[in-house]
Length: 239
Ligand code: 6GU
Image 1 (cartoon, rainbow, N blue to C red):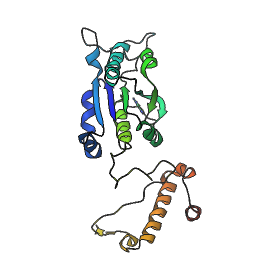
Image 2 (tube, rainbow, N blue to C red):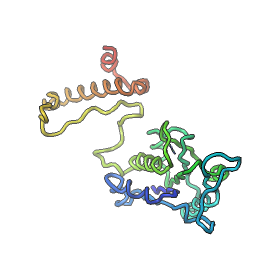
Image 3 (cartoon, rainbow, N blue to C red):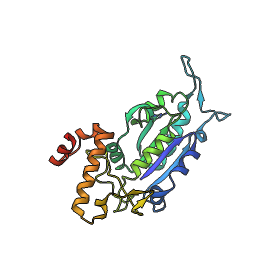
Image 4 (cartoon, protein in one colour):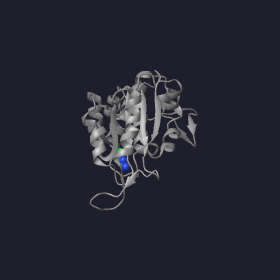
């Protein structure tokens, strides 16, 4: 899968996504991440890419022409019009189910806005999806594009090893993860729960399930309505 990120700050993009699981996926050729510098496509003598908003008001608006030509450079390379995501607090809130859906695409274009926004006419022409990553305001779409790229890339078949396959994770009709422990068995006088050292796999499984249910109840009770709960789970919640 190929990610094409249209941005005024291409230097922000590569660094953050070249490590760990995503870095390995890039090295192995399972995904690619291309930052396209919108400023490279300006026709302005001073390389300007923004101007004052018609009707007045604070801030500057990114102009249609350089954004459109940056987008066109991608579609001329792909030979079709891939889905194009505009990162904006005005969009639909990103979710795990959206990550899985986007992971089925061969190419995905992200348009990162800055200043007070992007000329609406180019958005009408190229954008297929308006997406936000949550209810807070960031200074630009680069971090959201990186967040989405990470979440989508790890859902591309082969990117996660068998060991770390993305099935049965939190957030899709599922519960929060249970706590994990590793050696040593005692650290700063804190013991690893006895059951995890017992070697009794049935008991370990039951304990982990309980921890997942209790964590979800405490931190994200909203998730419980979608979770598949056993009679044991329901008893635990009601106690
Ligand atoms: Cl997609 N963009 C900006 N600027 N701020 C955000 C966001 C996006 N999602 C949450 N906050």
